[in-house]
Image 1: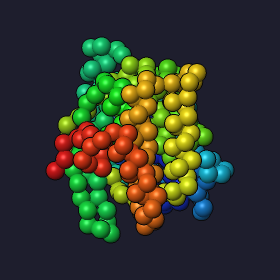
Image 2: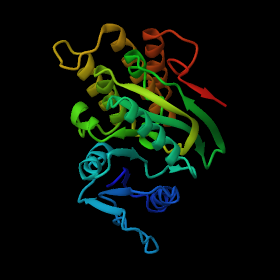
Image 3: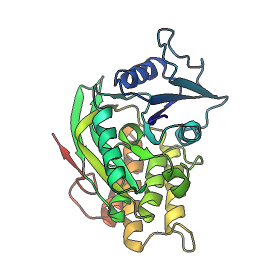
Image 4: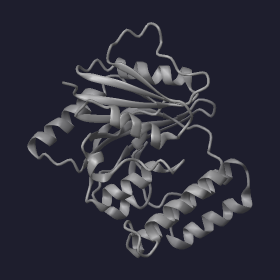
Length: 289
C-alpha cells in the first residue's frame, strides 16, 4: 500500500529539482512514492545516480505543457491515498511531512470527508535579495476568501486525498498561470475547507515574475470563467469583485517587475477601486513574522 504520492513538476531546473527531490527523501516517511514529471526539460531531467530508491518514478512530457498538465499527469499516475505537491524550485524542511500527514489521516479517520485540503506555514525567500518572510496561512471555509487569491502556497504545502480530483476535476491545462487559484475556486464552490498546520513546512523561492502578456491572458480567462452569465462556474457578484481585484494585483505585479509603470498604476488603481483598502493584498490571510 502506498500511503502518499508526492508530485514534483520539473521544467529546466535540474539543480533545484534535485534539491526538491532530496528534501522529500530526507523526510524518511514509510510508504511514500515520489513522482517527478519532466515537463519537456532541455536537457531532460535525470534521477541522480546516487538516488537508489525504488519509490522514485520519472514521467516525461515530450514537450512543455505547463504546471497544470504536469500535476494532472502526476495525479493520474499516483498510487497513494494522499497526494502532496512540491514545486521544483522549492523544498521541504526536515521532519515536516510526517506530522502533516498524520494530522490529515487522523482527521479523515474521524470524519472521512475528501473536501478538506491541508496546507502549512512556509518561508518566502530570495537568494539574490536576501529577503526572508515567514507566513502561516489562515484556515478557511469561506468561498469569498478563495476568490481573493491563493494565500497558502498550494504548489508546495498542499496535501489532499487523491479522490478529490475525481470530485472537483483536474487542474485546467489551458491556464499557464494561476491554475491553483482556478482549482481552489471550484473547490470552494463544492464547499471545500482549508485546514492548516501552524508550523513552517517549506522554503518557497521567489523566482522571476512571469511575462505580463501571459498574466493578462490568464486573468482574462479566469474572469470569463467565473464572471460570465450562464457559466457553470459563475460566482456571486461580491465574489467576482474580489476575484477581479486580485487578478488586477497579479497583472500589476507582473508589469512592476518589468518596470512598466503606466500599466502597473492602471491595474493597481483598478484593483483598489474594486476593493478599497490600504495594502497591496486584499486581506491579511496569514500570520507573518
